[in-house]
Image (cartoon, rainbow, N blue to C red; front, side):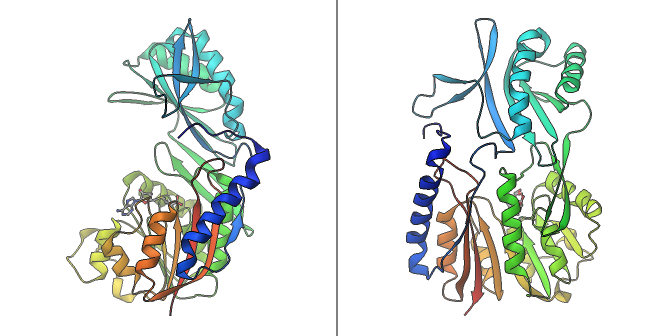
Length: 362
Ligand SMILES: C[S@@+](CC[C@H](N)C(=O)[O-])C[C@H]1O[C@@H](n2cnc3c(N)ncnc32)[C@H](O)[C@@H]1O
């Protein structure tokens, strides 16, 4: 795949193509007309990662085209990057060029920004980082107004904190999220807010309790929890669960139980399988689940989780991969129909499309 051409003049036509493909793929499953949620055409990405290319005494941001992987494409800027990243990019490059401590054997930089305006910059090296690096990095952190992390093999130096605090509202509901370096967060902040609002609108009125799998740092959990009596939310990644725990307090959530468990384990526990120590104190049988919410990785739902989903009257499914979503929806077609659909243009100028389905029992 070649690098995207970020041309806002092409935005509408590219999205129309993706939408047409999505509608054609899902038509045999009885897809209702999807709601379409657009992205900002530029400066929409809250995460960006670049290689750093050393040449002629300087260093530049580089990306590689899969068709020509040995030839770096040097970048002056990155039009997709959110404003805090776009502002920091030239300043960071100039600071690297000016400081041997910061520049020596650096090979990668990862940016994470928030809608609340925070910024984290992870600098990744092929050498051990020492006190000299830390002094230079402190000056850089002050200059950029950013959290700086230094990484090399087996080493991670955090100058202040390795997380950001995101803050925004959805439907007037204020939401706060700790986002830990290296953990999953939705890349397109504006589109993420639209996904949260769509999920809330589809979940409204269901009542009862919610079971959520793949909850990450609680991105959807805290937006959906006020619509249900109780929520049981599960996630595999330790750091995401740690962030979700922090976010319980940050959002004043009182009706959520969070368990670190894979979807396969949760499906097994719900099917009356083996006893899980992590489920001690959780009265699974006491829940009155009306709705299952899933936002799985690209692979979609595994067979055990699909079998669990079959038992729910309502399944709200957010997916970053229409192919696995289609396969899962087809597997559920005997029991569930598609009651509502949406596409979210999280990844403009690429073939990727985020989508959502509300599946209801026939
Ligand atoms: C697409 S992300 C969604 C996270 C969250 N819903 C959000 O909006 O930020 C998928 C999440 O599934 C988690 N995950 C991956 N495999 C899993 C599994 N087998 N069981 C449970 N969670 C898993 C990942 O750690 C990641 O947090």
